[in-house]
Image (cartoon, rainbow, N blue to C red; front, side, top):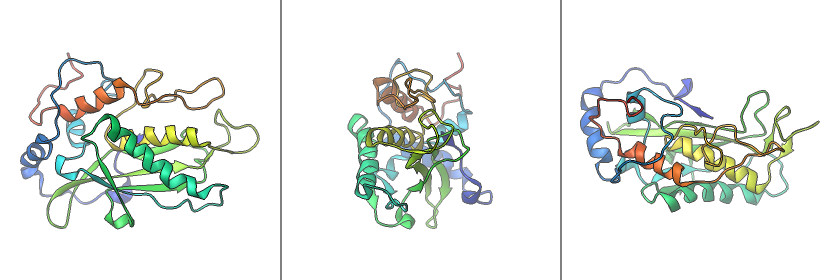
Length: 237
């Protein structure tokens, strides 16, 4: 489930906007892939053009720095979780080599921070992530940040539970993590079953389904190939 920048991360209006266009042009010039007509789902959940252009990482931000903390809850296999999330990030790089990540040992060093939850209680979600949110660093450089929330259990009332929360298996949590990393890269939900970014896709047992598909990658490439000076929204014919 994607979210815009949370209240706690909002800042006062910044004065760097006059230089934004130049920064965007320089920031994406080195990563925008050649892109023609292709199947993508960027328009399944249309966003304003300004958000499409700003909710993606600059070329100079790659590799994006990620902090994955240990799970703060008692679990049977505590050593499973950090490598699992790391592999979920790396799986996107495998299909989209421009989207690279490096893993750091402290949240203050990171652009993306993982936060663990026991479960999502009454929220209709198994994971959450913020789209990349732009801000100005202390050195007056435009950068982005995001946060991903992952749970170790499916909450009561979701498709996987009966009388008590159920722990996610490795495969289930891996798919959830892949999905949320997609949001942290700037991707919206897909309406097509099978795409890793499909919102709410699950099997008859309520388990999440999907994998990174060619449509996921084409959509990611399309998002990052949008010209900075584009005036017509790509979802308007």
